[in-house]
Image 1: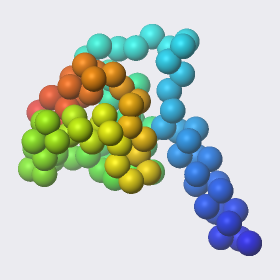
Image 2 (image 1 turned 90 degrees about the horizontal axis):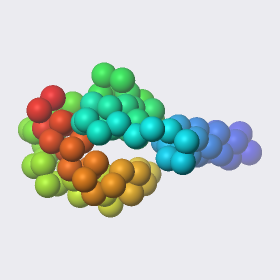
Image 3 (image 1 turned 180 degrees about the vertical axis):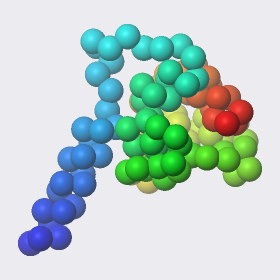
Image 4 (image 1 turned 120 degrees about the vertical axis):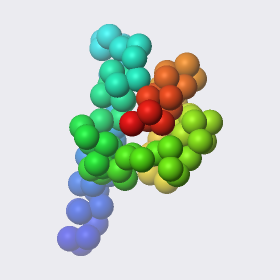
Length: 98
């Protein structure tokens, strides 16, 4: 029973932390701002990861196109579609440069 509560709490935290209120929040247009807007709560302020994995040294692991696909489609527990296609492209480019 305790494990069920832990899973429930983690799921609730994930859903609350990785969502963005797009109706009331003004969306930034730069890579860092978009990361902070849609990714920071799960991947950390310094890209170190929190609920989600770290996103450091992405250029060593993925191409810009692969990162964009991950952002658009999601992977594992990460939902896709949190950013528009253009925003995903901007964040992908920013992550490659980090």
